[in-house]
Length: 260
Image (cartoon, rainbow, N blue to C red):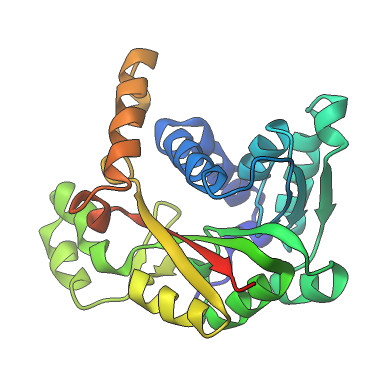
């Protein structure tokens, strides 16, 4: 697998973060926020976001009242997360901690008692998800949740097919890797495979969702007005939990619970 370009390339880092202000990124952040918070207890929680990037998901949780630790190994991304944190009001800043480390190092730096441990958009850039999943399970308290968002290996052909590149679509049917918007090869996982890997770490999957059923295969959605965007968001929220739609989403979101 290719190295993450945003670890060393500022323009790629900025391009990666810019998409969160567009329709696809907004949909992704909203869906994952709704899906994670549905499994949290009705109180302020301690949450670790491993591979937090620029903090887009973590800061939304902090704004909702949770105490969030951002774990991010990339110096460039950590700098952007610091800037995003600095732009928040004092109450939110007081609920946020930033740790520059990878998942495995975080296990030795942080207590293993988080109510929720998130890892979103990370596994697809790794040749083997197992070490990171082990770290997530060790960071989670008994009964806490582990949330993983990654590329859907079962639907790699969808984007190319919907965009009319049928040669690329044909090549994806037997593949586990494809090239994303940044031009970087990324690896896919399946719900079944993640379920087995998490079960081996005493984390039982409670549910899974598709993210980007309609939006993540498109390049033209930033032209939507706000009313159109809201309709897209509503459709995505329903499709995310509905068969057969969720099975063809670009991303899969698996939520598990650690054994008591």
